[in-house]
Length: 318
Image 1: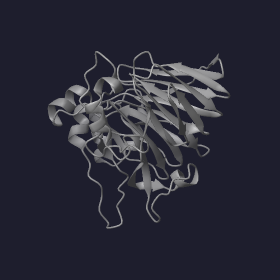
Image 2: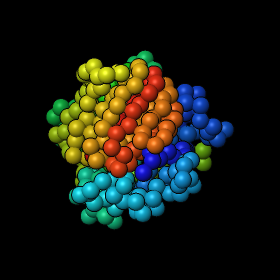
Image 3: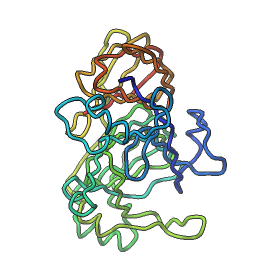
Image 4: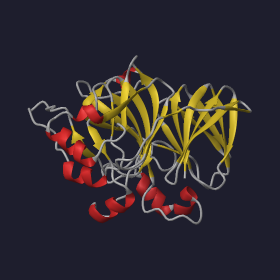
């Protein structure tokens, strides 16, 4: 099966902006605050539609069902495509939130999966910060007290970030994206978010967004800690690579290409998300162009492919 590309899915958010147009050239709706671009999704909220090729206009869910082994390979069992990849434009800070794990989501959210994610910082204004967990020693009781007194920020652990930083956010960890940050997010295929605190913001109609405090308190792991992952690159023919995330849910590598790099799929599907520059993907019977801000799905039945260009991509697989 040939690699698959998809039409962009834009999500309006109260904290969104115009970076998807300014940096990547997407034709986003005028006057809209677009906070998220879903580059590949088989989620209940939105399903990607294939763009170009023999399956043009068809849904990823339908093609994956019809050609399951071609896309996923052997000895796997996925009801839906297991990853969701987004580019997030945070012109304002996002809510303080947490995601459930698989066990909790399956039991209380209609059999859905949990949500563990990772962030790659594409761009960030000087001094931009993320919330990644809680300050040392914060207890559930203290957390609830500060929340009731609208002083939650006092217990949040903040880290300053710059382009190229990587952060791993497991389910159960309190987190938030600060203002002025552009992120590529690779995650489990779940849109479950429990908002804890939203800075008392209101939308254009004066309404506050819903909070999910009881559920959040049920799933927060008060002992979780995380920090930035510093990519360690090794030289390969035609570029260099850094394996930044290895988890049960997904593995992610940063690949910088200056000529051409050949990749073996080893019988697993690969996703490639271009975050800088444009490139061409050569496979056994054709070529696919990949522009910054786009994701291509390399089916498991494609034994190998070559990336040619001057670009940076995030490769994800399970």
